[in-house]
Length: 304
Image 1 (cartoon, rainbow, N blue to C red):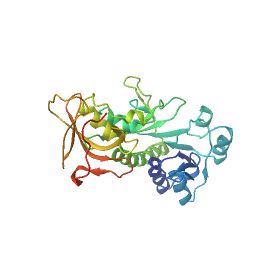
Image 2: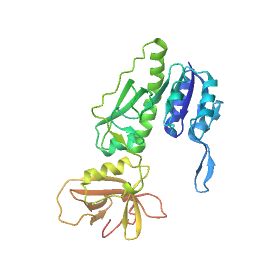
Image 3: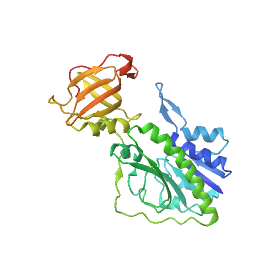
Image 4: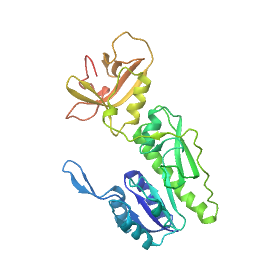
């Protein structure tokens, strides 16, 4: 099938590779413009731009998907456009250019977790499962009809990083299957129910600060969800301690929330509003992440 592809981060690359390997004719790749990256803040290609260039595919980097970008898409004369984590809004006029419309790879079980951060919000909320939906795009925010769904469990070991990679792989397989359905005439997306719809707000560094008055189970989920971005943190005096891994422990205590109860090679036990949060991997300012088993310097006193 002759197609266009729109995506930007590493999550999108697996789908681009899968479509290329399946033999589809990718006539145009759209991605966000180069952004500053690294310590030197030099302009760098997006992961999709770099991969598309390596595959010899034509790459376009519009600031907005307005008239000029729409002309590029129209001139590509494609049947369909596949969109995954592109990061730019596609107006209705753009959605109507491909003969068969635009398909989106969305990393949740729609209508749950529409929006920018569905992977992390599913873990943070304690969902038992998530997955991939292939959606026929409309002008709404992840509101289009869904034609294919693939499910994946969320366990107590699932992190934002591991779920990101698993869903990227699952989405790559799912979009190839969806396009095969479309080619056979079996693509029949169904409208999403409104019941259960919720919004996955963009992540912020401020919300990554741990509030130890909350239950330990809630904090442990947030630590897993925000690993590796934006990474949870707490203040130890004036120092910002980044917390990469933590687990919840049952049990009672009478200490104020945030009090360090003990520290050993298994972790640092911190009092919470309900139960104990055991910090297993942390990072001091200017340092690298260290595990409790490394007998590294452990926080003492109180975290806030």
